[in-house]
Image (cartoon, rainbow over all chains, first blue to last red; front, side, top):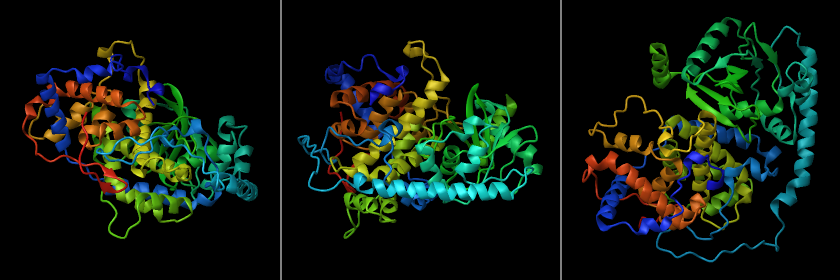
Length: 305
Length: 210
């Protein structure tokens, strides 16, 4: 796991693990006190707000489950959920290490192969339905409105205005299928704002306040000077994943710390994600609270600076 | 966090039910382990907002990949590993964008102190620990969180972190050494009890230690 860490996280002396067993008695006693102290620190309880947020995200995930349950993500796109393969032990400090067993269970059909044809058919049907819906909505709205639909087709029609937003792929199709279960609609602006770490929340608050008077029925708040586009299925899935299925107040393609990024804001939080953000891999760069004590403190700090 | 009540299904059964389409199974699994998983994310990320993001990403990932779980480790090991990786991944992405490292360990960026926290204030030792943990490189922090703060054995931490037991020992030893100056004023100011790990929802009989 350490192979993909930044170099600054690596400890050049870490390889000499034998040193850990060669500490003198006094030093070992002092370090044991540190260990004992750390062991006494109580385990924090998960805050209710966080639990609610995650439960909502899981509920949204469950709602979109039939369309993507058996679409295995590429191994390199989901590095966090690989199963340890070097151990068959159960947790428990007093037991010895069991031998590695990597049986293939050839006596039973593999779940992913069983469901793959069904999934492909489901994804195809979902794409057709969403494309049809997007086509219908695109032709029922005037060009002066900012409202959007969760449609791959309409996203493609806007690709000329913002080509990077209309980039579709297998993964984005999967995201579209999932996002399509949410009724949330929004647009993506390209304001060109140069967001900075120190003033992120303040910049977003100011942008929301400035655009408040122009808030559209779709819920997003495009600035008059912004380029507006319908979100691609990938970014739509990304945004709804972040917000737990709710409509965002702002989705802005801009720069953060000088690098291209999407800035997504709900009523209470701001997320900055990479341009390749999808529901499966958000490429989260930073997220900060937009409201509440923490946000106010940050705002105060930025004002004082 | 609590283990399964008498008559409740084990973690492995819940995960299998989820993979088979049970809409409630994963939620129950999450609620069963939420506090310990939160503790892992919070201690590694050192920021409640980052921890919340990491935990949410981890749970979504686990939700989606439950069908890939082959039962070669305990469900708790699998879940902890996902949370650890999500937390480190979040920090890694941020670090990669934030700094260009000179190679000198003294030049490593030290996270800004949490607002309102004075690390010299001995009146709130928990905050001292939080501030001290932030000074550690994330891999050392993760090892100390699992072994010292949550009571997992070195072997279990090795499985969760995906590194050798020797590496876990080394990280723990170096992490403790770095924490010593920050926590020396708290000597003896702690209760005797240790946090206990769990195995498939059941607390283990003893903690670990490097």
